[in-house]
Length: 318
Ligand code: HEC
Ligand code: HEC
Image (cartoon, rainbow, N blue to C red; front, side, top):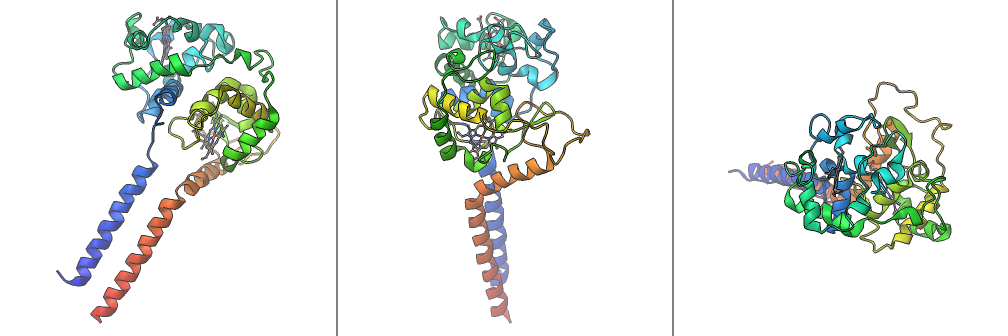
């Protein structure tokens, strides 16, 4: 083989290898801690394991009529049992999310992890069988989350006003500035979430759904590169302090002109799906790009090296 061909071959192989490396570095990385991993399964298990939701509605969905959502959301533990894990006794006791399904805090109090895993395999109710979608390891993570991770936030959140009870704003701001501001911005508006067709900021989520805010701040968001409070060693009260601070951030999307305001063509997105506005999309993209700067720098460096090699080889041939 002529030296030039060999160099080109090596160059192409390097580009391919780097390409594969870049793609796998971007793909989902589950939290190392089983309880946080279980919490992300509870949030949206199909996103957590990187598959699409089963077709149609979860079979038990039809046993209630108060919550009129359909499709993927009906398969989420969080949609049926609530972000406060208290089902019919908690925040979803009424309103459009109400299902009347069991309070898991009380239901699992006397159960072992094995017994919880059994209920997730349909031991009590055959239609509550997730074993064809989630393997034993994942079912165990869910059970461990329910045993060790769930917190009763009724001590921390006023269930009428949804404001924190005694959250420490100053400490919350300190934690926010240390860990959240670089992605969400000083006003919490840098990333825009689409929730069921509505644009939201961090401040809106904190005020409208503080339980979801706490769950995701403590345990992360499936498939999203984001710090996890539990892995940072945060205590339950730390999450509440950040929540108190986030509740003081701007939350009024309505008055603000947004890039895609009035765009009726977009289908509503899943709860907490990525921002879909042009602007929000760009910002989310920018975040992802910043996160990959390390890999990109390596990639660029290799490209330059290859360029130099090719020029050198061409020169040599002349
Ligand atoms: C479509 C709504 C729905 C979804 C989705 C759902 N559940 Fe349930 N869950 C129920 C209903 C209804 C029951 C009561 C029937 C039963 O005992 O299985 C129940 C019962 C349970 C129980 C047993 C409670 C008891 O009293 O013994 C546990 C634990 C549980 N669910 C956890 C989960 C977890 C974890 C997920 C996510 C993988 C999940 N559920 C998803 C509706 C749902
Ligand atoms: C590396 C960037 C990054 C950092 C740092 C970060 N986040 Fe996030 N966060 C995101 C992204 C991206 C999303 C959107 C996930 C999605 O919608 O799929 C998100 C989503 C969220 C959500 C879910 C909102 C919803 O609609 O339910 C909450 C809550 C949240 N972040 C809170 C925080 C808090 C609190 C901190 C600091 C402890 C933090 N984030 C730090 C990137 C980050």
